[in-house]
Length: 383
Ligand code: GLA
Image (tube, rainbow, N blue to C red; front, side):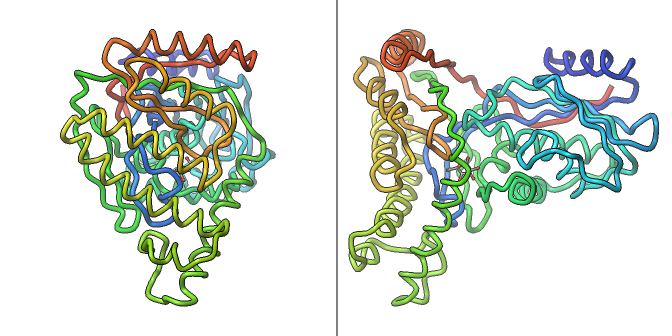
């Protein structure tokens, strides 16, 4: 049993006294190569899984009456009876678990421990990983499997209802269905995906965490979604055939007056195009093209979608000024979090050291960084 799964069982034993009949499920966090703020516009995305995951160790409650939840990372427990809702705020770690339990009721109350090494709140989808790992554990306890797409949609619903984030579907799908050594090319309209092999001999992907966490990120994210809805209505006023921004064209952008809506649509259209181009660049192992696409994506997220921030702009621009860097961009919902950097093989550590020193000098805050591996797939293990 891999180390983290073993550690989850040991932590469970410490918590409950033994780990008899415990199952351990895991689901990874993600990075997104390109395709941000496109998923909830029926668009295209190209994420890949991390080799960091959320682990859930669970079994039916021995007392037969109460749900017992424990977070090893927060060192905090929550207990509640199945007829009630736990007394936690929306977005609290236990709210995701309770939401999944609500959606996929186990045959009785459960004991569930969660731990993981996906940085929390850093835009690496720790919450989607928590939903998917909990979902897999519940599938095992129910003795009934759930198709990956259905589980992803359940996770998305939990995020909407119990965390108040009106997220798209990208994070849950890639966490549940992403494959080692592959990016996942996902069409968020048809909800079909394809695994794209990454021949990474010549390159490394480096993730740099700005450590910026903004409280307003959730509300700004929901605000962008609402703006896209309004932008769509502007287009539909003259062209009712357009059912989502995915199908808007550049002529629609040209027809609109210079406005927030025009800029939002322009991002969505150009970002979808970049995902298609990035996908063929990955297939050809054409890293300089992929690097250029990352830079253009950052620019569009900064100028047209307005979800970047000074620190992320600095991280991306500084990295791109260094030798061996093909391209860099902010990633995920925005307003803080991480950049993804495409770096020539062997240069990752030097680039990380250089960016860290420059960022620390300017912002008096040390970013964390890691070179990502081939990714750890979601799964479940029994004794
Ligand atoms: C968050 C959401 C995703 C997606 C990204 C932006 O990660 O959970 O659904 O919208 O932001 O691309």
